[in-house]
Amino acid sequence: MRSQSFVTLFIDDEAVPVGEFPAPVAFDLDTRKLVDGSHTLKVVSKDQHGKEGVKFIPFVVRNGPAIAIEGIRKDEIVEGVLPLMINAYSKGDQKTFMLHGSETPQSIPWWLLVGIILFAAWTGYFIITSLAVKLF
Image (tube, rainbow, N blue to C red; front, side, top):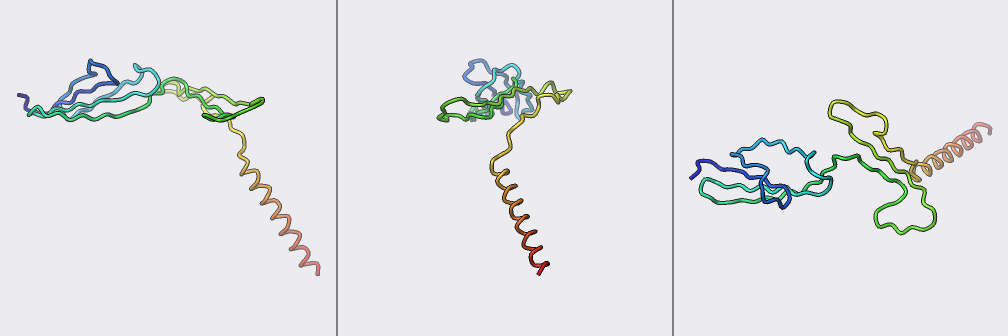
């Protein structure tokens, strides 16, 4: 019989564990070995009496370049010609930062344009009414 608890780690439905470690565990999960997409980390713990505890932790891996699309959304109904803006950018490595392509350009939101127009109209109204009061 073991004198301490052990933790066994599995990725997705693999039969072979990533590792078995005595508790507490400090473990570095290298996601570069996993394909991009959804995965599940399965943690199985066994105490010194043989009782098991299981926890499933879903996570998403995105090691490849990020893709940002403006102009169409998921499950959107569309027609005609769609102007799309697509950007794919990578983080680079952990030592250098890639400036080119690291930000996705976006169009100006419609509500911001409406706010600017309303503010300009209110400013014009305020100036005109202030001048009219001073003239009389």
